Image (cartoon, rainbow, N blue to C red; front, side, top):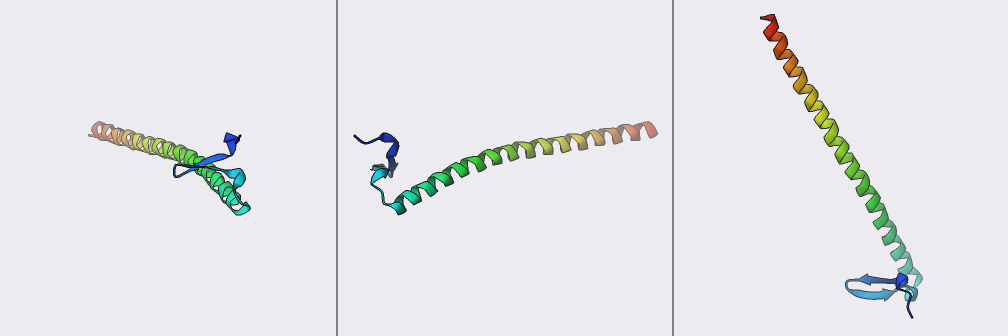
Length: 78
């Protein structure tokens, strides 16, 4: 009986990786590593996007507050 942990599906066809040659096993290892790295980088990108949005919002809020202060200062000066 084939161990399901060694079975992968490629384009709808199941393959037992135990029957792969060394080159095929190496390529599978590369693909798995790249998939894992992709997920890590996507995680980092999501964090970066949230941080960028937060800093952009903070800058806009600060600029709006400065504009309001300038308007109040001008009104008090006149």
